[in-house]
Length: 355
Image (cartoon, rainbow, N blue to C red; front, top):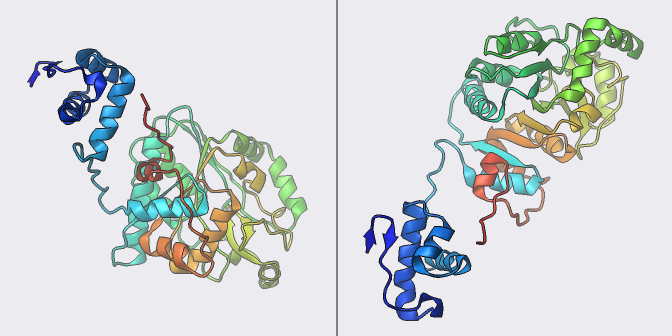
C-alpha cells in the first residue's frame, strides 16, 4: 500500500527478483515514478534496492503493460507522417497540418498560425531572426504573439507588387509591431540588371549594415518558390530570355533568390545569383536553424529540392503535400530513424535515462 510517500514493501528480498513479487514491486515502483514524481534514487531507497534495479522494474512495467503511456495527438497535426517526412529527407523535424478543404487563403492561414506558434516557442531575446517574405509568411506574422525583443533581419530585397501589403519591407514593419527589438531592413530591390549594379548597392552604407547581419542570423524563416510561371516571386522579375536560360540550367526551386535544381544543387544562370540582393547560399547554409513553410502539389518538386539542398532544417507543410513528397516517383527511400514522434515536433533527440 501507499502511505504518504512511503512504500509498504512485502517481506521479501526484492534483489532476488522472485517472480511471485516482481509484479507487485514493479507496480509500486511505477506508481511512485509516474504518478508521484519520485526519483529513481528515492524509489531505490524506499525499496531497498539499487537504482539499476529500479530502472529494470520500470522497463518491465512498460513492457508487461503495467504502465501504458498515451500521447494525445496535437489537434490538426499528423505526427506520424511528420516523423516519416523528417526521417526520409534527413531534416531535424517536420510539422504536417491535416488538410482541410478550403480556399488557398485558408490553408495559408493554417500554416501561418502553426509557424507563428512554433516561432514564438523557439525564439528568445538573444536570437537574430532572419525572414524572407511571401503570403504564407505574411499570414504567420499576422498571427504572431508578442516577441521577446529579438533582432529581426530582412533576408531579401523587395520585388514590385500590386499588393502593397505583401512585400519584404512590410513584413519587417509588422514584425516591429509584434515587439521585435532591433530591426535591419533592406531598402533595395531583390534583383537588378547587372552584377555590377548589385555590387554597388551592396556597398551602400545602409544596405551593407543589413548584409553584414546575415552572418549573425541564428534562426531563419523562409518560403520555397517553384521555378514555374506563377510559382515564384523571383521569376516575374527576370526577362523571358533570362527565365528560359534558368530553365535550361535545370532550376526547379528558389529560396531567398537561391536557385536550386532537382537534386538541391545551386544553379547559376543569367547572371544569378550575382544580380540578386539577398542572403547567399553559403550564408543561409551557415544559419543554425532554418524553418521553411510551403505547400501545394505544384510546389512538390521545389520543396523536395529544398529539402535535398541541406539549406532547410525544418518544414511546415500540409498533409497532401507531405504524402506527395513521400509517395511520388522522386520520393526518397524510407529508412529507420532514431527520431521519436516527439522529436518530429520538437526537433530534439530524446533518450531515456538508463538509470
